[in-house]
Length: 571
Image (cartoon, rainbow, N blue to C red; front, side, top):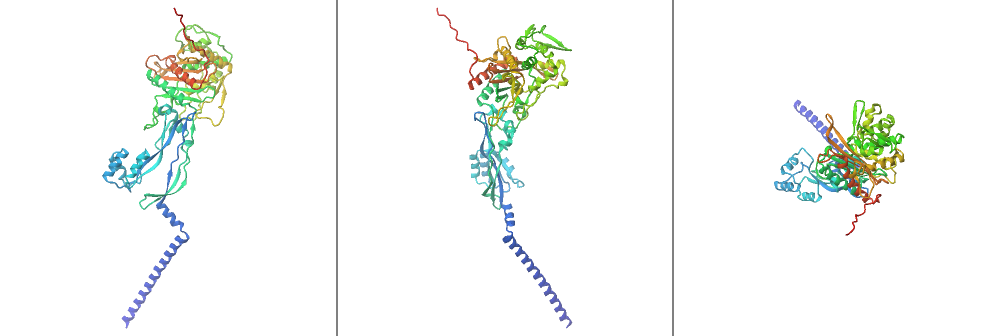
């Protein structure tokens, strides 16, 4: 009886434990059913959200980059639709035959394709970017799992090298790297859109669900340049740099009335449509970023300052004998002993001694302020990347010899565009408009600064006409049918040991027609090594060729009588 009673107690305890476990399991099931009902009926957005995270995604839709056009609406930069082929290594499955076909279509070694797509630790790898949509469609037609193609845009520059230094270029991600493309990147690039896509269990795109946001195209940029003048300037500068075996060259052509840049070219140039890595050595716009000592092209401004202060007149006589003079321990020399010269002939013969005597009679502060007002040593505010300020010595450091060297163009530096801007004052009645590369909105007039009186500007311009004559240094700058005013410059370059005797920069700065200037131009040829190196022989002919063509393009009437035909009496 004792044994029987013990078994009954065990059975009771076992039954109690079983009932407890059964109740616990039933309670858990009830909780799970209630939780499932809650999530699927009451709070069903949670499961939808989790499902979407695994099967619904958002893909960017690239925006069309804005165009760059010239003042007449001619295309300088435009984006064309292309496709980029990429792969997902986790999905990629291909036979050797398919890999070979893919290699042929994309122009890639089969080994490179395997290297990029047989690494399962990667979820994405570009195979080829910016290829034609037709080739991308042929690749997709192979039906290889894990191979996709997305739409992108590729930048195209219709005139290539001709405008490359102004327009610049973009990288493979369509981001501006140089020039206008960089300066106005935020305006040009637009805003990307987005689309919602559905993926299957292997993360493959199986359906476009909806558009989340439409892409906003970038804004167009209209430049002030004239493509016709740009091409003319490019052709003539390139020809001169090659024929004189020069290191480089720059040319700037401005509208004399409002400061618009009508042409700006550099040599050597580059093709922005080619695949290359950005290299500031040849992609930078030297006309804006590089500076040099302007030499004798600065002399008209020293004369203008003296005229403005009432110190001299065109007929004022100055003795330059014996062709040299000491300023402290330093010696200033002319090429020849020109003897007694009036102010007009000082510019005509480009006398350093004459300019030194004029400058040393001027109050230092007013002389420095005049150069400062012309913009030397200051930013141009064009917004162009890498724009140079140039250099003008501080007033406190101005000594007699410094003042002398400034009068004939040494001891300060400027870019080609800065020098051209200064010449606008002589062409525009003493008023200097701010230069610009991008069209001003609406009819907004350019900002103007009066630098000198109209009488002074006109007097200096008349003197500069004599420079472009048989008696002057720039006969080769003359343009048939037009009066031309300008100034040559032949500048010694500095090296490790100071100024070098045999390394020069050839310059010409001028305007036409001189009676009422419409165009201002500066030509700079760096280190010509074949033949002559004087500005009047190297840079002046480029000015003549470009100016003649540009004046015809804008239909400017000649202001000088053309020589008539020679008639001989018949016997």
